[in-house]
Amino acid sequence: MSRSTSSRRSLNRALSVLALTALTAGAVTACGDHDSASQRSTSPSTTSSASPGTGQAVAAAGLHMIDNGGHRLAFHVTPGHGSVIVLDSGGGEDSSYWNGLVPRLHAATGATVITYDRAGLGKSDVVPGPWSVESAVSDLETGLRQLGVTKNVTLVSHSQAGEVATYFARNNPQVLSGAVLVDANLPPLFTDEEIARLVALSEPQVSAAKKAPDKPQNRQLISTAASFVATNKAFHKVTWPNAVPATVIVSEKTPFDGSPEDAQRWRDAAASFVQDGPNRTLVTAKGSSHDVPKGRPELVLKEIERMVATQH
Image (spheres, rainbow, N blue to C red):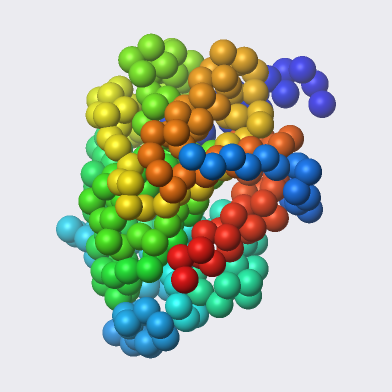
């Protein structure tokens, strides 16, 4: 691999924090997980079926197109029993990102597993204008409500989806039994200084995207950049509810593999988040890039299973 190719991949991983590029450019081959490679520390369908033990009727298997305020969102349901696991992918990625984990999670836990496409991705409609975390949260809330999911949810969120998860948890603590935040955006990272650094880093890519604005990934980049400063200044002040347990998986290489200072800030933000409340656990994915669900699927599977098991 050439040095220039390596640099581009490092930059793509960094920009994925902003949801400005897809993670596929920095994807690594899935490999088996071993305990020695991780480190833990603790601080629309009309048909539905009953999910035993949950007291809620969860929608039937398959694709469900959910309407929220005039735009439609694609939710995919693999029915099970007991818990409900909702998988939310990072910036620029749709629900297919989780295709390799869905059957394994279902087999391991017996839970209902739900994935979905955020607006403008996959089969979901485009919502014009700057990206809005409030709109994204509303989409998830509406989708789960229409699917009959009202409680006992383990929310699994990667990268930018950490912002959606934080607001969702704040607004709906009674719905969540726990969360697994996979190298996710977390409030402590987004100081004024770090926001300015990230904006400067993304400027060339945003300018390039504007030359081909109809491409889905470019569209996501442009819309995210338009609201990035205001969105993340507000996000920095949001607190995770103490009633919702959370496991934070942080990659060793972080999205900032080429910037030691930003990489340390990413790790420090994860540690700070865990220390700031009860029932939170920090897991380091040794050797992993930001693309933890692809590079360390066994670790992600294990931590989701652990979270689901502890909620029974």
